[in-house]
Image: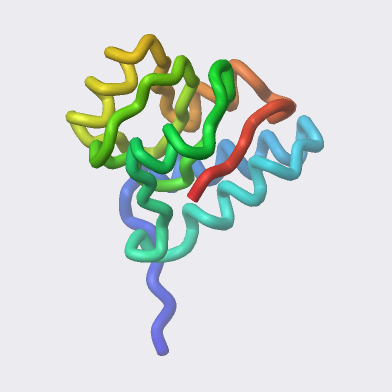
Length: 120
């Protein structure tokens, strides 16, 4: 079976940045996320807002190694980082007073990965 490579240059750069941050900052969470993103995108996490509402607490930092979808409602003030957001999910998160980030922005804000919960 032929092994395929990622073709999206932004994704390849993100994976390399996560691995570099793991080596330099000694934060194993970024290696875990890089390995999840290296898998085929059909195996990536897809998390609905209803799941975030159910399992997240106010003030949490949630990382979704995949896509956040807009099914359900969210009323909590949480910071959510993901590779992608659907338009309805992004609007709902910001409407609830939350914050949405890309994974690269989260790495810059929190290089040690302390307090970050992975969901998905």
